[in-house]
Length: 316
Ligand code: CP
Image (cartoon, rainbow, N blue to C red; front, side, top):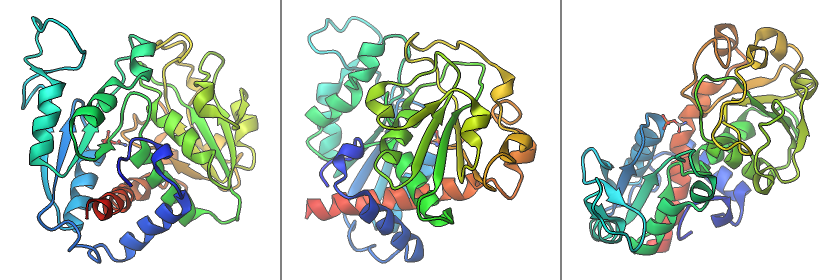
């Protein structure tokens, strides 16, 4: 594997899921692989799980880690080509990425969608520029449109908890008061569409995701109908793709409750975290046996470790 920007960089998801599960069993089996190798973790946005799980994964593989909050610890970065740099950003990504590529063997980058300009966000400028100028492999720690390390952890978690060969997996929109990116939902769709699952997406009218990501998923606008017989409920809020970045409703009837979970096949509750309690999901559900959000977050280490191992093997 050269880069890990999206599911398109993975040739065999099942093999990668199994690789993650093997690392979970034997975390230090490949600690020789990253000796004298360094990963740089660049954050344009906040993080808890991604930052710590990726560092832990790299350290399990014997790597050195360096983390940088871009624009806070470092100069603000200009991403546009050919501009007069008379604004707040003191350094161009062209130099910054190339320089960081001299210090690091792998660069991992988190840069959320701005939610102002759909064309710009979906062009994935930050990932594209780092890939173009860093000269080392790039790992996506959540970009404007995708969160593939999260999706791989989600696949690992479903593999661990499924009780039937082909489980029903439901991605449901859940209410939130502020506009959030579509990245986690987009990515989850991309990965689920490549897994052996019955995949359903449910959301209010106006929250349709880009058809490029929804693919063959069945879209049901009635949440109760979608939940019927589900083995996994994956809750996430996202802002509108059509009315880009807007919050169209905060309809509390879409919050995940015990009554809704009772419609499922004793289904497991999943969320990428962080989650706002009693806004997207009730305490009762999150604190129940059906919730596997902590185990899901724990699997972020094994997801990152599987990916970093594949990239390290390519470095030679
Ligand atoms: N799920 C996830 O990416 O969490 P953080 O934003 O805390 O990294």
